[in-house]
Length: 260
Image 1 (cartoon, rainbow, N blue to C red):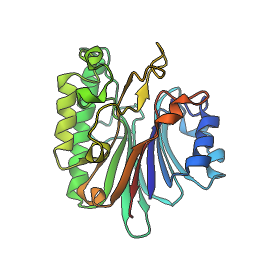
Image 2: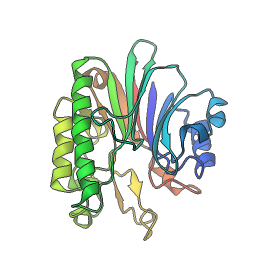
Image 3: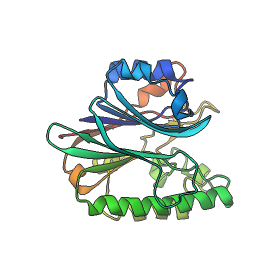
């Protein structure tokens, strides 16, 4: 089962680029963030025509997450538990049955948190605390599960081309990194770093300042795997070349393959 997480930065603005990517890359499952579309306005047809089942949790113009799967989506739930008053569309999960294993897929778009300090950063840390609680529950189920998406977290200095430029940014503040480590240390495997230790691998390049041409990137798109999912992982990669195509997102897909 080939699974990709991809912040597409607007499904309507990027529809042609995303469908072209699906045609060439052909993931079994695509976890999309920042769809920036309400559920009833999401363009389902181009994806369904390509054989994908579609589940969305969206809001108009902002945020929004979606799961595309060539296999049926079961037990779909929307919204991260822990705050019934949270109206931001940042979490969706569903189960997909592979050839041998059922996999729980959680697609997330973690808050940016800037400017920090401030209310937006407080919301980010509170959201991460809720994420930690959901992560703990997923581990307790002792089944294959993945939490994947745009975490808006630079876990370590080697995950940025210029780490000094991010020292005061919400993506790299000590509290952010500590909250991320607490989640991983519950017992998750961070897929990419489990296989690739070297610096210089990024998943986001800003549109400003020629960041892509200078490879001035950061790695903020992650897949966290329960032990049962980690045991099934056979490969992982970042599809960085997509950033150089026409009308790209500022993110690129991050991939894993599971023997499921």
